[in-house]
Image (cartoon, rainbow, N blue to C red; front, side):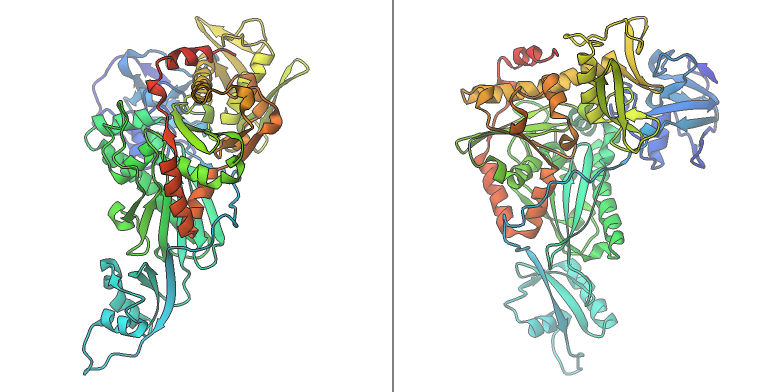
Length: 602
C-alpha cells in the first residue's frame, strides 16, 4: 500500500472496490472513504460522527493510494506491526482503491431478546383504532350522493363522522375492485382508510433509541404481538451521541433534514420487514405509537433543536402529539396517526415515560431507583410516591461506541470478560474468534482488569502484564488477537460510569437519603439487561447495596410504548406520569463537577 501525507492533484475519476462485497463506488470530490460508503447507502458505523475519535469505521487498504486528513501521517488503529486497519473517516482515496471493511464496522441488526414483558393485566385492551366489514349495494343511476355518502348511509353517521383525504382518495377504487365490499378503519369517528375484507388491522409500536430502534407489530383486533425487530439507528452515522447529532442539525445546511430522513428510514424499514415476516402489507398498519428522548423526538418531527442544545434546554413541546404519518413520509394506512409519547423536560423524553409506565409494579412501594441505561441514561428516584427524574450524558461507550474495538452485540462480539486463576476469560456471542467488544463486555473488561490490577484505581493501564503493550505514551491491553482495550477506552468508560453515578448521588442527596435507603434498583434498557451488576458495582457505576435489591427488566420503554398502542388508558396514564415527574437538571447543580470527578476512579 502507498500512503501520501500531502495533498495531490485530484484525478478526474476514482473508484473504490469493496472486497468481498462485489461493490464498486465512484468517489465524488474530496470525500473520505466513510462518506463515500454512506452516500451510496452502505450502513457503516461511525460512532464519533466522522471526527476520528473512535475506531468503529475500520477499513484496510488492500491496494491504491490514499491521503490522510488534517496532516495525519499514521492513523493505524493498533500497535501491531504491519496492521493496516485505519479509520475510514480520516482518509481520502487519491487513486482507484481496493478496500476491506472490518466486520465490526457494519451496522448490525440488534438483539431483541432483551424485551421486557408486557403486563397484560395492567391496562384493558382498548386500542384507539377499530375496523368493521362493510358490504354495499351497487350504485344506481337514479341515486344521489357519492361513494362516501353511500358508505355513511350503510354504516350510520354515528359511527363515521368525517373522512381523511387519503382515505377518500382510496375509497372509490377499493369499492370497485372488491365488488363493493371492504373493511373500514376508523379512529374516534374518522375514517382513516379502507382495506380489503380479510386483511388484518395492525399497529406498530416504536422505541426510537439514540443507538438502536426497536419496533413491534401488533394485531389491533386481538392484542397479540405478531413480530418484533430491532436495528441500529441510521443516525449513528452522524454521531453516536445526541450533541454530535444536534450540532450536525444546527451547523450544516440540510443537516436536520438528513437526520429526519434517517429516522423515517428506520421506521419504514422496520414496518416493511415486520409486515413481510407475517405476510402482511404496511398499508394494513392503522396506528403507530412512538417513544424517544427529546432529541430523538425533535429530530424525527423536524422541530428546532438549537434551544434544546443550550441552557436551560427547553423542548419545543412536552405534551403528547398525534401527527398524520404521511406528514413525516411514513407510508402506512393513508389516514393513520403517529402518537408520540410526552416528554418530561430537558433531555428526558417519552422513552422514560414509557419505562415508568411499564415498570410501575416495581416502584409503587418504598424507595426505588429506575435507571434506563443507554447513550443518554435517564434516572428516576421515587420516594413516597414523588418522582424526580434526571438525564445523564453517559455517551456511547457503555454500548460499545467510541471504543477502539467496539461493536454492537452481534456475532463475534466479546460480551463477558472474567479474571480467574490469573487469566482473562472471554465469552463471545456465537462463539468463535472475537472481532470486537460490545457494551456488556466493555463494563466487564474494566471490572476484570481492575480486579487483576492491570488497571490501577485511577484507571491507568499498568505495565508488567503479558497482555499490556506500549508504544510511546499509548498503552493497550490485548484481549484477543484483533481486539484491544486501550487507555482511551478505559477513560471513555470511566467518564460514562461517573456521569451515571453522579446523577444517582445527586438524586439521593436531593431527597436527603443515603444509598442504604434504596429498597430497589430497576435497571432498564435492552442493553441494561446484559450488564453484570457485580461488574457495575465494582467499577462504581451503581451503589454498593445487596445484589438482591437489583432487578433487570429489559427494554421497558418498548413494553411501555406497546401498552400505549393497545390501550387508551395507558396513553392517559403516560400523560399523567409525564406531568407527575419533576425534572431535575444536573447541570444546574453547582457541585455536579465535583461529584462527577469523585466517581471517576475505580
